[in-house]
Image (tube, rainbow over all chains, first blue to last red; front, side):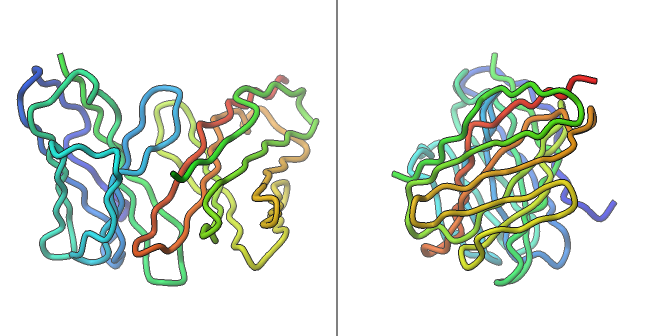
Amino acid sequence: DTGVSQDPRHKITKRGQNVTFRCDPISEHNRLYWYRQTLGQGPEFLTYFQNEAQLEKSRLLSDRFSAERPKGSFSTLEIQRTEQGDSAMYLCASSFGTSDYEQYFGPGTRLTVT
Amino acid sequence: GENVEQHPSTLSVQEGDSAVIKCTYSDSASNYFPWYKQELGKRPQLIIDIRSNVGEKKDQRIAVTLNKTAKHFSLHITETQPEDSAVYFCAAAGYTGGFKTIFGAGTRLFVKA
């Protein structure tokens, strides 16, 4: 499968625990995006990388959220001290170049905080 | 802050009829407007997009129009089929140091056979 992959697909955690998600973009894609989607809503922008540089981060993102893309390939999204309001689908997307804006989405990681 | 409003939230049409979904955006720096289709339990997939230097784009039964002055853009689906039933999201994006993409809340389209 040469598409965007995410791991794990599902995560159940207790409130207060830390969780980390991984995204592997399409191999030649230099842009990577993280979104959060709750039921009945559109994807909500969290952050964006161009290669290894994190160029934009949503003001909605609290300090408990952090993302990395250390070698410009895969990315991780960590949520510290999870809260029930963090329960959502976390989507990763990637795109290529400066002229092709199409974002290809991964299958998502569904987080449930109990 | 940036915002994209999408209407209607739900749309029900008879097979063969047309469906129109409308969006407005607030950030005048937006220059790229994609539309995504998301079926239940699946990832969003791009169906058509338009850039700010174009007023209209068509791909078979799907067309998108853009009015930059009014900050409006619309999706038109003609000759709807039951397999068009899904949630459709509009989005607005622009290069402002990054490539932030703001999505609308979605339109659930039902096509009745």
